[in-house]
Length: 121
Image 1 (cartoon, helix red, strand yellow):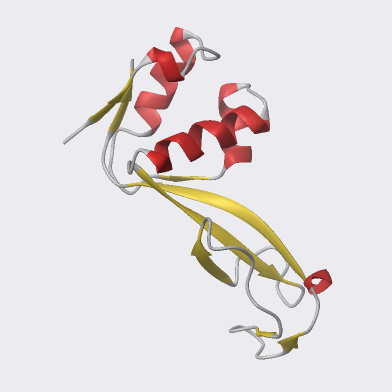
Image 2 (cartoon, one colour):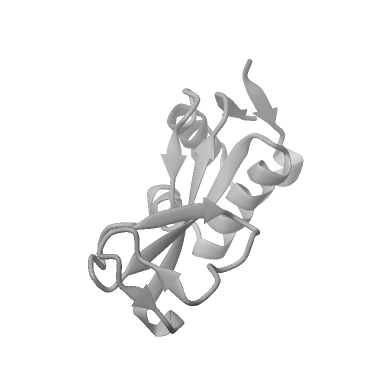
């Protein structure tokens, strides 16, 4: 079943941007990071993040906090549900099995995964 997101939540988006979003999210399990969405639509990162957080609050997307470790800085090592906070330290990297004592060794990003097709109107 397709979810419809109405313009009251999307006042900052043009009709072309909403059409682009609808094309992007036409299938369930589509994933996107806020910076990708910002670049694709030509909007601010904060607007892209707000849009994805709004979709998660409606139960249409699931947000994940991606965890990166210095051992493989360009690849997410782990992902936890958005809103649960940062991982507790000490944290053991599942990739290199080193024990991380400080957040200085980690970096984070966000990703949203759609649960169903979404149409932006």
